[in-house]
Length: 95
Image 1 (cartoon, rainbow, N blue to C red):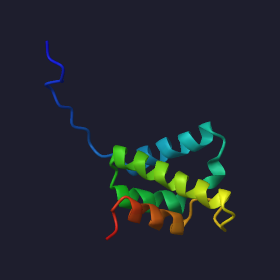
Image 2: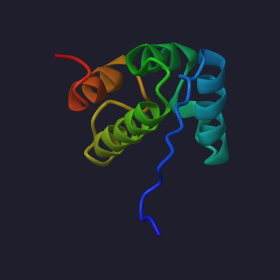
Image 3: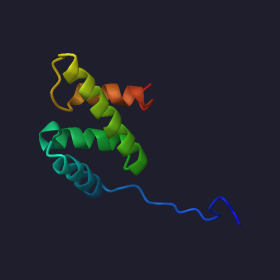
Image 4: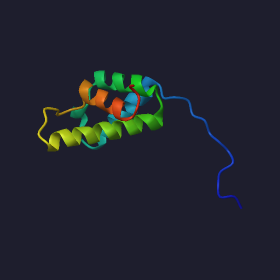
């Protein structure tokens, strides 16, 4: 009996179309598709390079920053370039 899997599965990075479909489906599911646009999606994809796990982490962090901005009365009301830059800094993608 082994407690760990002995086989590894390597996945290819997401294409931009797959990434866009995944992200928009998440926002549409929660009825908040107004929070993101195509320009922001391209910028996020550029930072994550199609890595699915990093993309999920990036979106989660961006939404947390946006929630903080909305609850504290800051001027941000959707994911724009400033939120994306702050998220990239938080995750260590920009030095």
